[in-house]
Image (cartoon, rainbow, N blue to C red; front, side, top):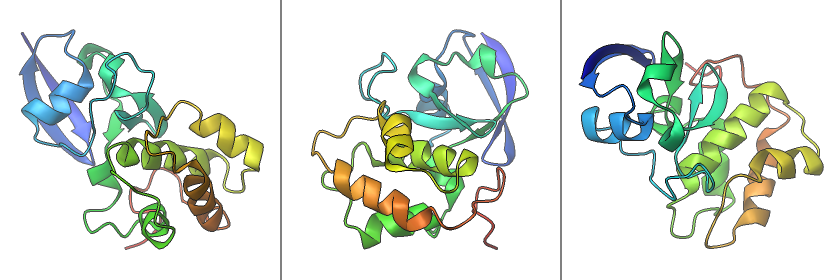
Length: 163
C-alpha cells in the first residue's frame, strides 16, 4: 500500500492503496465518486472515462501510481447540479436511454469541445468512437455535442465558464 495525494474535482484527496489500483476503483471504492462506471475493464467501452489534466482517459486502465500531480475530473466535477452545457444538452436531446454509458460519453465530449469548440461530424465521430452505447443513442449524442459546440468551454474550468 502507498499513500497518494490526488487532486480530484479541484480538491486534494488522500488515499492509501496499492500502486497498481486502477483510478476507477480509487474513485468508486475509496472516494465514493460513483458517477464513473465500470464497463469492460479493458479501456474499450469508455464508460469509465474521466479527465486527466483535461484529456479524456480510461480510468479502468489508469493505475493510481501514474496520476502523480495530475488533476482528475469526474462527471461529478463537471457540475454538482448538472448545469454544465453538455449535461443540459444531454437532457434537451433526450440522449440517455439506460444511462449507463452517459457519464463516459459526456466526459469524452467535454474533452473534445475543450480542444475543438467547433468540431465537424468527422471530428465528433473520431473523438466519440471509443465510447460504446448499448442503447444506440449515437445520433442524439452527436446532436447534443453539436448543440453545445458554438459555446466556448473555457480551459479546464469544470463548470464550463459558469459561476
